[in-house]
Length: 328
Image (cartoon, rainbow, N blue to C red; front, side, top):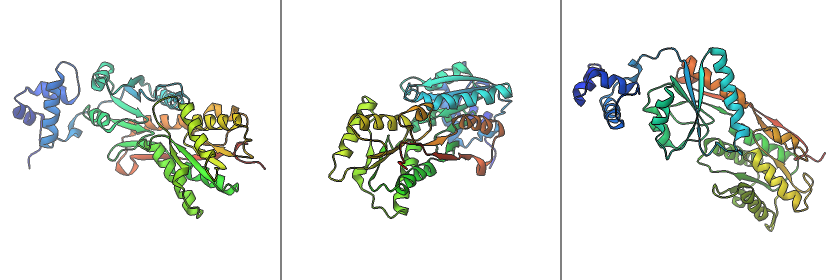
């Protein structure tokens, strides 16, 4: 079978070779409809996008979903961005930050910055990721995993396992988990670790103790409502593992305001080890994620072009035990 070339695509679409080349490289100077015609024809005909010459990476776009571009999420993603900035500065690469709103034309925002490569941090809808793949630029996912795409993630499963195992070893009998949406890869993996630790300890999982928080409305109020429900069960919980530190801090505040003693009445563990975790009273036990290392690793994956066996990096995590979970 003969190799599909840009000339082949030009003949199939009735466009010039120059137009085809600019479309495949996602360059300016054409309508979105024309670009789409070329990219769809290239994929349909089996064009090898590896034929496109990739020069030295001089500009990287760091993409963050608009739902993460909040005060609640910034303690996690700001260090990730800083880690990427440090790595780029060392390599003489310009890094631009883009808050992506799926309701707006994502590819238009990308073309405005003209990056040579892209980092996507945190959750993105599959449709957005598919659109970004059409840009045909080196692309790395940070704190997100998708089959066929290069990624770097904390060991979320291991972290969830360690946090739950710790609570069980502290003698807790009714361990609950407060989750965000399981559509988020990191949260899904943390929840898997939670359930695996219960299983390995031969503790029967109670569906009432596996709580997914609503994504709409006030976060603290949602946590308060969840804790109210868990503490009013016929057999109340005596420990809670929260999918992130912000949720754990809100859960601890609710318990303290309700007159409970932490950790004597209820033990609490978070995840991420944001700066606020050590400053709470009592200090919050948590799973430490090296957030800057995630950003640095994302840049390294773009520069080193790993083969398939090295395309998915996992950054180790560490359980940090503080006063919120142990009373000895």
